[in-house]
Image 1 (cartoon, protein in one colour):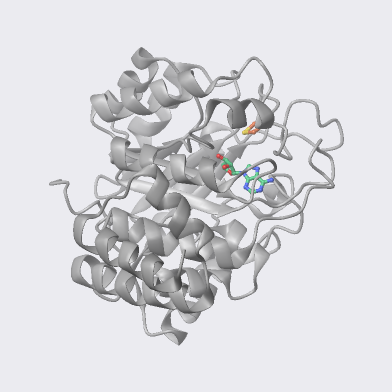
Image 2: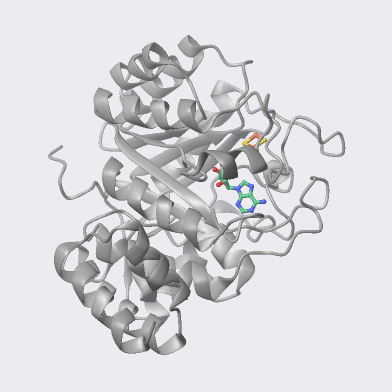
Length: 353
Ligand code: 5AD
Ligand code: FES
């Protein structure tokens, strides 16, 4: 496959916003820095067409690090006995949301491990009270796999968006990353339910996860096209020392950036964060992510004393900073590359709110 033919496929992607699996494999295997630069340039055209130079911010509250699952890659997996577990109370979560509002955030993300301690009604009440206090805020949930009725209850309580990465579209690869109790089929069913209910839905995967091949990544791209999520979260896989994947090699920054650009070309108006994992893998990862096509950043709002405990991977950034520091830091970083952080809900542009 010559560089010329890969560039032709990228032109096709830029026009038709779709490729088939074989074509994706060629684009992925054909990576060169020059081809990536071409992708980023095209990606920025779409980013600017839909969102200008605006970067949306989401205030992230990590509400619990208890998790009933045992994903092999994740630092807060159930079998990790070496971390101190915590849960924020509903009042503490509301206080974080209030602080986020004062700092100018108009999206609050409640994220956590799959923690059965909070009942469906507890979460619904939490969403309801946050929306009552701040009607101009969007509330995003990222609390894992639940059944249709639970998702519906939370949506009816006022939740606007839901993040649930599909992790990998390939069923065998999913088996390599998760124990028997979890299945790719159920995860994908959850995503379809979320879309059906009306959530702005986010899927995504890790780049460079153990066992991942170009074919798996090609399947991820085909899966995303078919699902048409409003948001896509990707970041490099980073090992955590207390997991079965402690000695695996991390995913690369350059391939993560390449995928951000490719996702922007495939789903031109998608909400695409430059993730904390990307910022951890490379000190300028989030800036480079935006320049590759990302248009969202997610500063941390969690109380400082719990931040270190929410470690999905090693060396996570922002664990020592106050919420206001994270906000200023990101504002400065985005300005340094000619973008402006904005205080708005930052809905997907296909959504009328
Ligand atoms: N490295 C990078 N990302 C990770 N996640 C979980 N563990 C890791 C890790 N070790 C990602 C998963 C999950 C999201 C919340 O964080 O994709 O869906
Ligand atoms: Fe809980 Fe992965 S082990 S999110």
